[in-house]
Length: 331
Ligand code: NDP
Image (cartoon, rainbow, N blue to C red; front, side, top):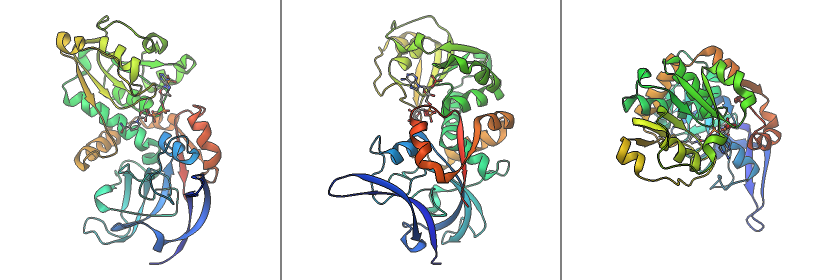
């Protein structure tokens, strides 16, 4: 097939190194290599997409680039035995939107290995509302479960609670029967966080300053998307055998901690990566979301937005002015 279509393209002037982005007409012949071509139906905006669009951080590593790290759509051409024309698929991560054209376009071409069949119990729009944030939250919850943390063991602390990962982690954990404490800098979001399933709100100021190497044993587990001093204080507040799933760096990438919680309380710090996670782990995360994501909470978290407005939305997302998750329909 050869067809012209519309894509949001980030380009760079190789002399001035200035980056610019605009909607352009491109051809399916220009799509990157891959064995499956997809008609994109829905996408979303993650923090990483906003960084790519605004060039606040060097996310894009190949130009020209189409941003959009999450895609839901249907297969329109396939050289893979695993996918047939008409199959509904989803894709998260794999360097898409960084080194491989992503979802802010009517068409995308991917390696079959990167794709998953869309879970039957979720619509394409639901999958994009969940997106990398929700899928990462699910990977974190799986990590706690695999480490043996059970609802009866005690409270699970979620940091960065009103962010994307935090919101989904609260909802999933609560649906699975865990008691959840939500750490947030936006205490005015208490009603929202409680509607997702948190029973206790922790002011993030109590975690963001340097604390003691060992503090009171409060939590059986944690999902941390904040890193830095916050994560150090979370580690210090773990109960004996507590487990932390660490996935983010909203406060910083440093980790000023000691070995004391590990050698005296048997605490486990478990890292979580969504971008290169193997297929079986992705399928487990999406099954967890399909089965346990509360649909009312999903609706509460989700806002429809117009993909034509991505340039205006991106700086707002970086400034923390957008709550929850945006879904774009790609017409
Ligand atoms: P969001 O921007 O939606 O949420 C981050 C939240 O962190 C904010 O809402 C805020 O929550 C809190 N926060 C922000 N700044 C600070 C600060 N200086 N100190 C303490 N808390 C802060 O981002 P996401 O939820 O999408 O992503 C969270 C993190 O996880 C990011 O660092 C992201 O890069 C990372 N990530 C990692 C992935 C992986 O594969 N490992 C995948 C996806 C995301 P509140 O206002 O409630 O305090």
